[in-house]
Image (cartoon, rainbow, N blue to C red):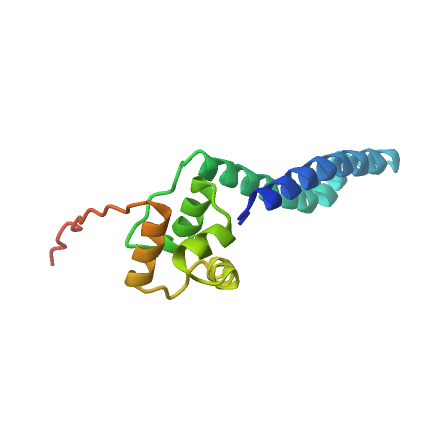
Length: 145
């Protein structure tokens, strides 16, 4: 997960470089006389990495536009907290200052996607980010017999 503008810029540059490398590599393979099926077999793993990085960049850009995924039973709360910080345009250092934490604590928490966070701590982070999570309770239909 991309967590900062600097990481976003690095990922964009890697994507540009990787796109050129993929194209050059495919041309070399063609030049070596490989058939399309052989080229595909060689290129697919490389393209897979490129697509994964592209998805991360697109995800970060969605967060900047405040386009968040829906939570279900609080699964993904940690990722949402990271996303909210990004959407607010705050650095980890700025969030840490608002929480009166050390920056390294926020960095560790985000790296672990706030695994095991308490409700009180999540509430403090939401307050510091000026965000509110609203929940709705829905019961699954009762199962018979």
